[in-house]
Image (tube, rainbow, N blue to C red; front, side):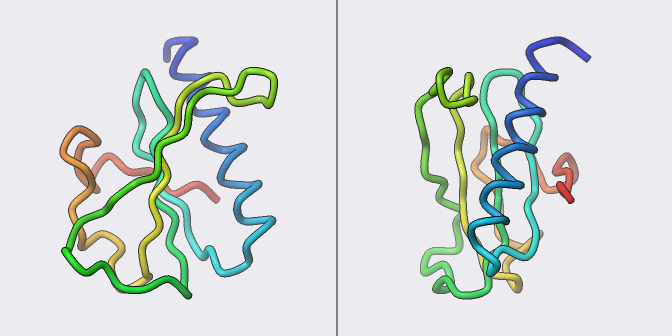
Length: 101
């Protein structure tokens, strides 16, 4: 595993843990591994259902001073949409997603 991928994975785990700690309605977090950015889908119980059948992430710039050296994309979906809605095209499929515990 490359050092860049290790850094991305570390940031993904950090973001998943922090988001879960601050929002108990997040039930699962899936990481879509990538060499350039963090890509997370968070399964959240209180958000509205997707109106267009797409996962639409919010994107954030890197913040090295804040322990976030890589850009990140984070999407929220409902539990009944997990592994059903297609991820953004460049993220790959659900078959590569890893659940972060």
